[in-house]
Length: 336
Ligand code: ADP
Ligand code: MG
Image (cartoon, rainbow, N blue to C red; front, side, top):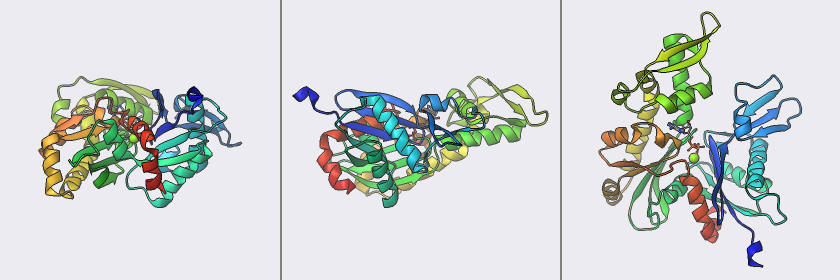
């Protein structure tokens, strides 16, 4: 009976977050790509949201792992276990296995792509299909990817930033750089340590970036200070200090500059026709990094091209994988 037809799934397997799209329902799950494991037994203790809470707070025998690093699988078994957990949480345990479209960051090698297909099958997929992340992001952002017009998408995630121009259903030119949200967090940790002798953790650094971070040093001067807590490196004791937003902008400047260089280089790689289309239609930003304050203004100023932030930038890739579920035959050909 038709209402028993199994639902297929699209997965945005990100370095920071995994989002699951279920056919006919939309995005049903979005959780951090984190797994907590018992070091002694190698057993999975928690996945996603629950595991995230354990980062930096685990007792000796438990480690919180982010199995996707820099956009590729760093730990195969843990990635498969994490995907299985998310699939079961999204559609339940079922007799018939779903087909799964999963996105891979642009620039991955054949071996890395193979590993993602294998991990997806191991996680319970009947068949696994790959879609390139910037392509999925562009579909999810509503860009006319199949038309003979050039679009440009910049997906700023946790581990990588993917820049791509797209036309007629394919990627025309692209760059993947390992400069994105995680690197901003690391830069904030270094900056605070060297300027204030204060040690902060990754989660605190991320919270500072989200609350206070701006891509523009100039714009950051109008923002309020923020109280942050960490460990004083001189006394070893906990300490609270107040930092200006300008510190955060200065700390992340290197990463912002890296993203701008990649955008410019990708624009230079395209034909004059596609460049002209991008100038007309603008660049679209997706991924969590698109939510950084003033990021669109700064990229627009540097490239002299209009820049827009997609609506729900964190959801674009998952929506794109969901759209791809309607054209599985197309992706089957591509992923083999
Ligand atoms: P991935 O696809 O690699 O999993 P996401 O697209 O989910 O990455 O984006 C996650 C990144 O976006 C993280 O580094 C997170 O800190 C960052 N992020 C989320 N919200 C904001 C915000 N409001 N401002 C700046 N960065 C943000
Ligand atoms: Mg992503």
